[in-house]
Image (tube, rainbow, N blue to C red; front, side, top):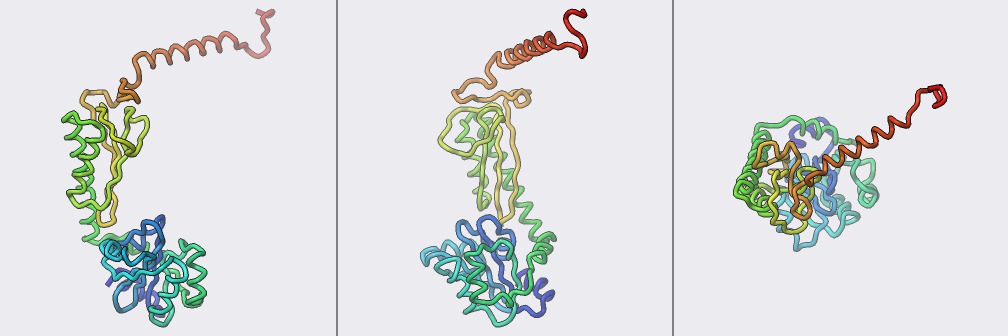
Length: 288
């Protein structure tokens, strides 16, 4: 049984089940209840009061093995996220009223055929807030998963530190960190890194063999659909990170020598020019 079956449905005794909607942008409730994260097109999950949870996804038959690996629920594939999905629900859901989770995310392409096929009166209960209240209270198993995600994040940081200490380039160092995270079971690893001493962060575009010192990177790792993220700053010399030194676009030291001195001199000239041209109110050169 899921959290909604054991806790949410008793709150709505007239409901025969719960329909959970999620898309690539808004899928927290769907991922929490089924473990499934929609990548492209939206999906729904049907959770009956008694029985198996079914994930309804708009994919081709060839995608069934891939979709099934990403969820523990039974998978049913339909042609599209509109009429086909609504018709499946009409044909397979048990008679009676349903509670709806994530209804505020549903777009008109699905909401309209869903109401036409099932009827607006059959969705009298908006259970999104109920699901969110359940999600806020973490079970012991969930806390263990969150801690595991934090351990994977630490492994990625340690891998980056070891590669940086060995003198590897930016791409090789980041790859070592990502491999370390995947070896510990990360579902997804996303990385941003800096090539200009932390002034900007960028994703991977092309191999970069330059050695950045300091090297600043951002990691986000996902384990069991729980994310852990953090920043890592590595420098071989004391104070290098504080001074903002690093590798410029053409392998030059950043900031270039003399840049700060030239900037300070420029501002000093402007300050003096401004002071020489200002006068107190009411005073004229003749009154001096």
